[in-house]
Image (cartoon, rainbow, N blue to C red; front, side, top):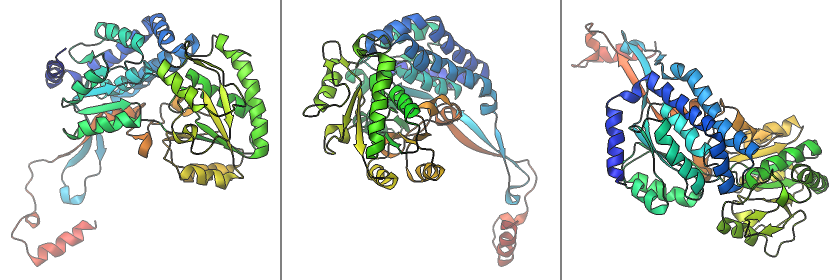
Length: 457
């Protein structure tokens, strides 16, 4: 495929002003919803093939999520597109000032393999809402979903404005050599640095949705049963392959023992005594990542789980108590079914531990102590937070989603996505009314005095 020709086709389409049209944007958004709803069974099969995802999980985190993003955008798009009046100071009177959101042009969206439908189509909802053309690059590590999207997108969406490019490193590298108006990438920091370097050659803005080690602190006031249920769901959703999954837990000795017992019960309740046989538990995406996780357990003795089968890409829900701080479990993002628990003395020690490390994509606190809750919100920097739950902020479209520092930058979801793929253009409109001579040369001391007086009005 000639990628230069493809991007020129999309840029020509953009230059016709077709995508500026409200009706076109609404039509494309509704077509995205039709795509996922009319082909849900096909998507479920592909997600199962790539990741072993249960159907309910695929509906909840992929199909339903994308449809919800569409519904939210369609209901509010006219308001988002409307110019926003701002106050015009006396020095610019008479005049009218406003901010006009304008599309950026042709954007590149590089998706991730862990939620391969959501992490391509949800950013596309934002890009189309803002009036852009887009090239989609699904992950080659989820080939079944990539193939389905490559087949369906041209059938449902305007092919002059939106297209899919399949492939791996070679194709992504070729795309990054071209000049886009914005690049959005979801994935890991190593690839993000490559993308930023390529984008810098064209001064192309980027949005990076990365990850990191999302911490959890559980104190002695927490309801342990509810806490364990919510953590177990969030950690072993998609077999732990979620960028905002709990990465490790900090808690004190007594609470830790109670939590471990409660997690054991929740794992059995959710996945049975043999999770490998459960229809509700997924698989690791490929053998390489499965072997990576198996290697993380070398010389460690899990207190829950630890069973694995490389051939079927299975790793049981696993808990490790107090792994060495220099182990890969504690120095790298786990992105899998292993949950370390570290024993600390108190809340302040937990905060200090977290703040000495890279800022995470998410941070979770389980506590009834309102003082500690406020301290957590004020002092722990993270892309997003939940108090007494995990992941569920992602179900609130009014809350922007994005990282901070090494966990990424730029935000999307709802209005934040529209803004992310828009330029907020400043406009001042003035009539042809003769200006006061004070504005123009020659300048005098009297003019300066008057201007200073006017400046404070």
